[in-house]
Length: 141
Image 1 (cartoon, rainbow, N blue to C red):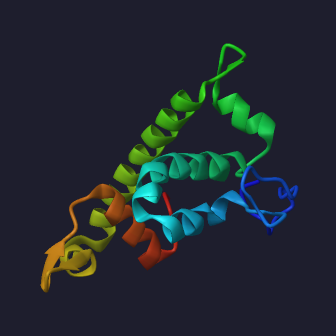
Image 2: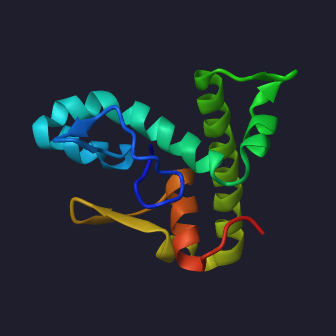
């Protein structure tokens, strides 16, 4: 249901246009086409599902549920989303620390962004982690 170009696609979706099921990954295009405000209300939920699907596909269903179960019971959606956020924040923090260590004196030159014609050094750990992966092509060592 998430995408239409992997073995997971079964040709089913809750949104169907002229007989064609629309994979979830394309929903932002549909929502934006209508009204931007409509997408703003749905964006967070869509992103949460994207993160869950991404994690689910990293291994087998058994591996996913081994991580997201407590005493044999599958965690609820909200608990899974929160656990994934916590994991992402932890990974981002470690990557940001790694970036600062590896880039040392060149960190301020490599980890910048522009806003309003001004250049700033990144402070947000998620942005630093993303840039670190872009620059080095690696995650945690």
